[in-house]
Length: 121
Figure 1 (cartoon, rainbow, N blue to C red):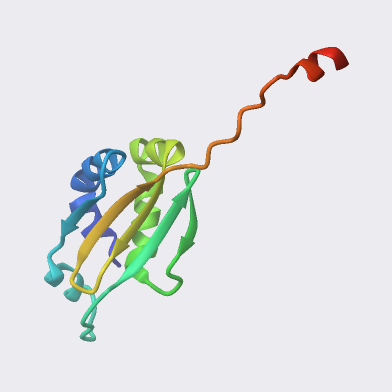
Figure 2: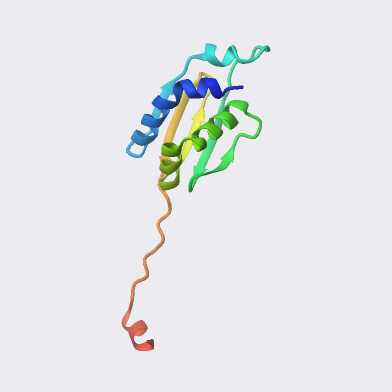
């Protein structure tokens, strides 16, 4: 239902995903795009999607726009590659502002070899 809307914004979202690695990004979207998609009037479409290791980790369960955005992003090879390298939180507020934030991955602590380890070998 919302795939056509997200396809319209995909080129901009790709750029914002790349820029979000450095600093949080946002995009003010046209509310009429979303309101045309439904026969009932709804005032806002707020949702969030958490991408971890190239997959959806958490998402607002009942939000159609969120499901369609996640599906479209994961079907694009360039975006899928970026989502595999970095973790992102994408959310849209009731005023149709899409926010994209890169979440640093937890670093595995490096194993430091001590003299005791060398003696055990």
